[in-house]
Image 1 (cartoon, rainbow, N blue to C red):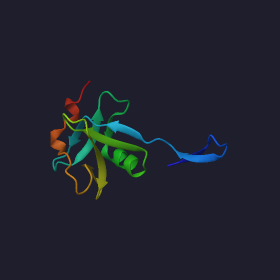
Image 2 (cartoon, one colour):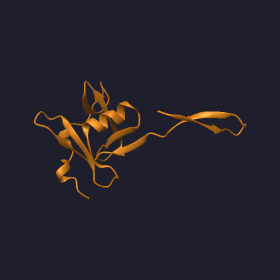
Image 3 (spheres, rainbow, N blue to C red):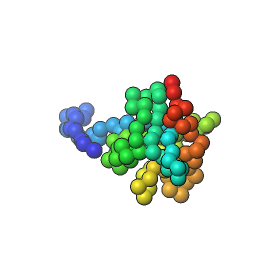
Image 4 (cartoon, helix red, strand yellow):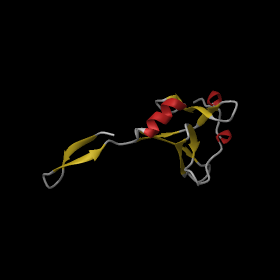
Length: 108
C-alpha cells in the first residue's frame, strides 16, 4: 500500500494510507471440488473477477471482498488460506460458497 503526505491542521505533513476498496460479492463460480474460481457482482464496475486476481488484491491490501449475510446486513469478508478463497475468518463461522448464486445466475 502506498502512503502520501497530507497537511494536517497543525501545518505538519502526516502520511495517510490509500483507501482499500470494498467489493460486495453477489455470486461465485465453483469448480468440481467446491472451490471458488470466480466472484461476481453484476451491479459493480468489476462484475466478474477470477480467484487469482481477487486473492492477489486481498493479499496486497488493495481490495476487501465481502458477502452480506441474509437478513442481518453483516459483512463476511473473504480471506486467502492455503492458496484458496474462504468466506469468513479462520476459526469463525463462514458462509458456504454453495449458498451464493452462481455467476451464470448473477445478472443485473
